[in-house]
Length: 354
Image (cartoon, rainbow, N blue to C red; front, side, top):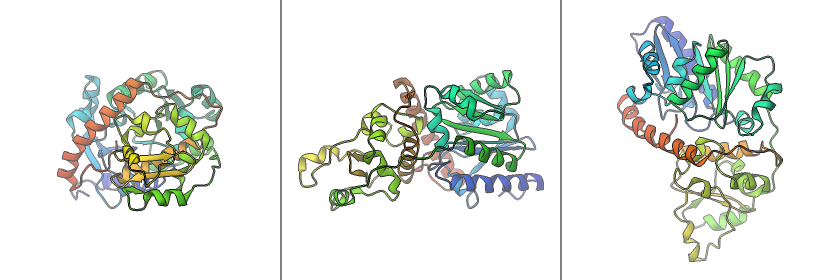
């Protein structure tokens, strides 16, 4: 932490670090380096760096200090501030336009399970009654999302909670304690019991993984993507939210369709060797040994989301152009983060995030 900063900034930033670390360590709220947090203090916007994990907030310098007035001026000129401040979160504009001192954006599993429903705005009216919240239909991250938020705030200036269609949850408050309490309340209201799923065929998976390039996931929850018929049906319909494309930006929808159990002795099954993972119908999931920690965490989050979506739910999948846009944004900001985060923090962007 910079020794030249004031005592006020130091104290507020410490609170944000502690809050971010708690949230980043909860797989129901954060998967890998997705999500971001920020605080505005003494004219500075401290926002999470692209590619950094909130779970690391206490042991690493994950926040970048930005000139708040300059960031807001760029948004007013319809310029994405993340293009100027290399290494800053892709959602920097969003954090700047929200008036709250503390802003938190999470990919909450329960929230996403609601936010992918076609009837989400209607259903959430009951769930969120009494809170100062608003719904924002899906819009790409970055400047477009910030501009939509500005429109909402112009009509409803006292909004503290935003539910983003096919995306996640945003909260703002006067301090870290206020935001954490609000998050707990929203979690309570939107909690969904996960569906029980069939048993995993570990014997078949072990045979496939033996002497091959496949690994078994550390998180047993992932296997529900293959063993649960409802999950397989939901996955076959398309992508639910942008973070799915992080697993494999190219041909992502096809990759999430299950395959019949391959014969490990059959060389013809090598057609699967370039895939990052296999969802094996009725058996379970295997990962390529080249899959990153972030990609594996994304799969865990996906399994948790889908287990909270019922078979009767009408789902609003991402359109092809939305999938393409989210993949392009993810690739672009990974490249930006790789250079800047390494320069400032000694790390890389191998663990992709926002």
